[in-house]
Picture (cartoon, rainbow, N blue to C red):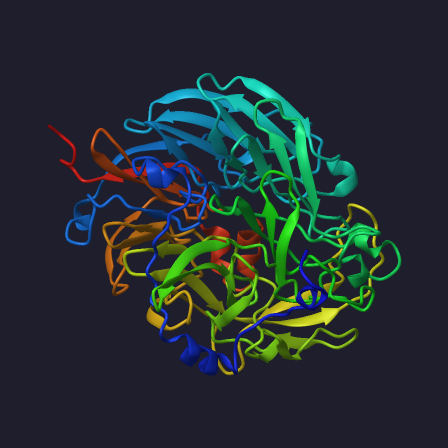
Length: 569
């Protein structure tokens, strides 16, 4: 169990970042270890991030900088409903693509031809008011089964060959908790592990592990400690912990050498009024490391204690190994909604560094060398304050990519602010518990802008930057061909030179991109697959800043590309 000093550890980055960068300048990003099944089988994209290290990297290199301009469409598959778009990342194992679309419709496709092998349509009460949207970010495949979380807070397993339902368990009554599941599960040994929504509701978050074969609950880690548990003292002595948020929106990562799961935990509730919950509010705003077998806490690091900005720490935990002075250090790189990226020792949870990936930050003046926040700028009751970035974040949930070839992390950013006011609100279980209001604003004296960038993942040194007309809302993909793939909200799916950021190729899929592109190979031919279809809570709020987005075409399709003659005998 971490010591008490660690429980109150805080974040890092801004005014002192130059000092930290000098201390870190000698770090060479030599990645010596790989995590997860996709590394053993590079022809597959076997888990949500491609591998459980959350790199979103494929080592396939048939498509490269000098021939990517020759990519052609090989096949496309329409899911049949555009409402909710297509937020998912497909899975490909041994020539079969598994895809989940809005309303939890699951498809198995021939990954070489696009032929539909089977379809599964999840059934839920049509009068059910879905708490956090009908979209789904992804699924997991293993043990001969396909797993997903549902719009009504169930976890479901299907037979991977037939699509027939094998088991279905309810996590918690969504009509009570106001929560559901739209993040992808992942598999560790004999368990399927999954998070959930609810962070903007009066709800207590958790991570659940189920035995893959049966659906029986193996363990549950509550992100907010209950009475008598370490960390409960960071909450007031009332029922605030029961409604304190801490959602596990997205997907964790896993280090098999330590048998540890790493997960980013969301904001405390209410979002913008922390007067009713004094204290650090563990384990909200944290990265937690859990034993994969038992769910027991190994360590945690709190990036933002007593958050009052809705800066979820729920984004991807990227696992890299860095060698310096002949010694390899196991690190965790964690882009976060606040506009900063944290770097931690993933063995101990010790703070290493934090650096800004956007320029427009005023919620703190800086972060010191020990990771402590300097001069918090918090929302106030009855007074509107300009907070940067706004609650949309320095970026949305769509994921970064890391390439071991360049040693760089690729990430997008948004320069924007919001007039923010705190409004006291009484907690009602399962109901919205935001306690504030935000009006989107441009930074002082500047327009709202967006960009896609390459960084040294440890020091934060920017290697290149590509301005974009709108925020990039697709996840990114890095490949062994020194390419970075992504998609914009106007429908352009594009390829960049990973070393320079130069755009080398693009194709318009007809609708904007919100899901995760992948790469895989079948019979010696490399394919790039791009989910296309706008949708999500973030997208629904964009017309407040960009009115024209309201008229952008909807869609829900996956497009697959390859070189014209690759792999042909």
